[in-house]
Amino acid sequence: MQEAPPSGWPVDVLREYMCWARLNTELVLSGAAEAVLLAYYQLQRRSEERSAARTTIRMLESLVRLSQVGMRLLCAYVMTFDTMH
Picture 1 (tube, rainbow, N blue to C red):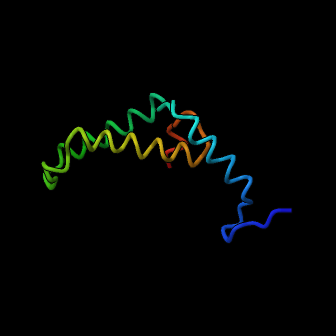
Picture 2: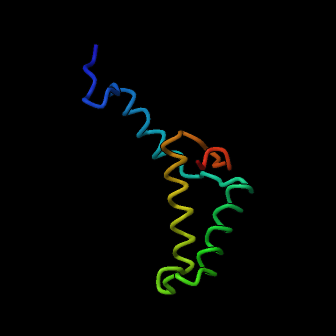
């Protein structure tokens, strides 16, 4: 029997997860999740207190990448509105 690392996850489970995360790069945002990200981005663009230098298309791209990281953590192929929070 393998000893679990301090986090409590067995090493073989961590290896399987890392393999899955590397191989599954085609992750998708559902229409609702995409609408939420876009609405947040647009709200930031319209905000009077916003920093114009920080609210660029790169911000929207970063939001998408963060969502993809969340999908990987959840072992999900599709990010839905329900899995966003």
